Image (cartoon, rainbow, N blue to C red; front, side, top):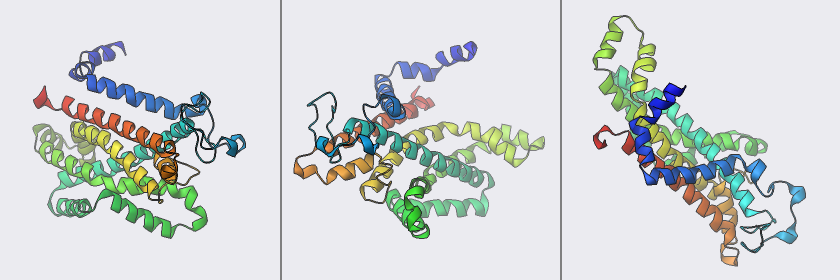
Length: 300
């Protein structure tokens, strides 16, 4: 373990990370959001979803007026700081699940298309090209609408989070597939793949054991950047009213709820969740940009 840690500390990636103020700052900001989100049940000042603890007498309290409600309260008397912490957790979980789904589907399709070639490669890539002609949010809206029509109305709230994950994941897989397909086309012509074929290793083992480890670099970069996009997709869907229900509010849901009171003087109900969403996505994108540069051998 100590030898592995020592090799990691001597690596170019660690050196690049420790000498990049942007990467360090983005990591610190992302860590604050992750700790606040996943530690919300223990460190949040209030439980914003415990109906017994809510009081309409505390509704629309101004921010910074007291330490009890540092970011104010909404129309139901919920503490905005606590609601943002819990909402960030939902946004991160949905975004991460959607990216994992898109990554697994896109990497699998890209590996098969790049290694097989021929008509199968052409068919899979034309499907990806057709999907890329549609904006991701429109594709997610279409998929969400189809599943909502198929699922009974009384079960919408219970399955909506899975529908959103599936909708965002399906709308984002082509980026992974095209990058992996291009890298696989390069790798399949190298000597180590030819040697694996000669000694009788099957296609599945060649793809998963030999080619896949050599194409993971770009996948990690795309996955990091896509996480920020997936969180924005979920927030957009929730803002449009087709995202998560109010019983599982994300940052997008909180922004949509606060939008009704934006011009009534209660600006903090929508501004603070919006700022939290902006900072979260900014931190993730900055980390993705650093990872892209750090893994690019031409920039070393």
